[in-house]
Image 1 (tube, one colour):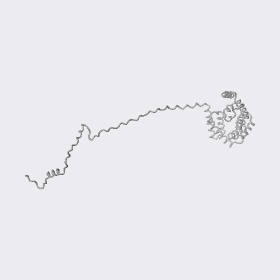
Image 2: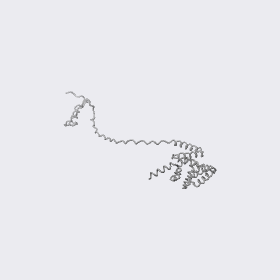
Image 3: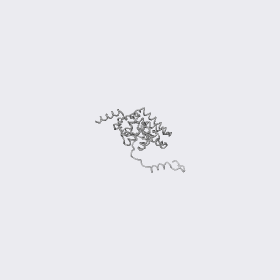
Image 4: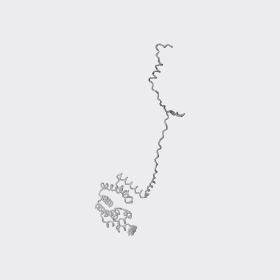
Length: 251
């Protein structure tokens, strides 16, 4: 036998003994054979996940309503409208300069010449009252026929019918051929429900100035006179023919 070296423990023998004593017995079960990876496949590759196919909601096409028809174009303005606007603007400019007489004259022209322009008519009446009120504060007492007619117009706009009649009587006494005084007298008498007297002064104003006929046809202050035969006679044959046609339709 070979001699053992001094101090050298039997390592190999101890290891074998420990392996036999502390080792667990091997399992008798056979493990399932793992599938061999395919050539070219990645390691630890996850299997593909199949997504559920969701049914797409059906889009219901709604009927689109047709576009609305275009708004009708406004009727063309008459040449008189632009003339009325020009006169009205001149009156506003004169009022801004505190030229009350010129401004009042411009507004009166709009009212008398263009009664069919309702929008301008309301504004012209409003500014005319302002001019007349301011002028009445500054003006001296009326002396001439024209001054009395102007004072009567201011009184009518203020609702002072009695004062307007007083001024108009003085104006006609000073100048019997003043057509404006007779026309304003017809308006004042209509407001007092004295229609027969109003018709007489209206006829006189038309005889002195035929242009007053066109103004009287559309003047709202003379509305209560339109059913009188005297008013239709003052308006001429055309007004009488229209009245007969309306009566025939009603029958």
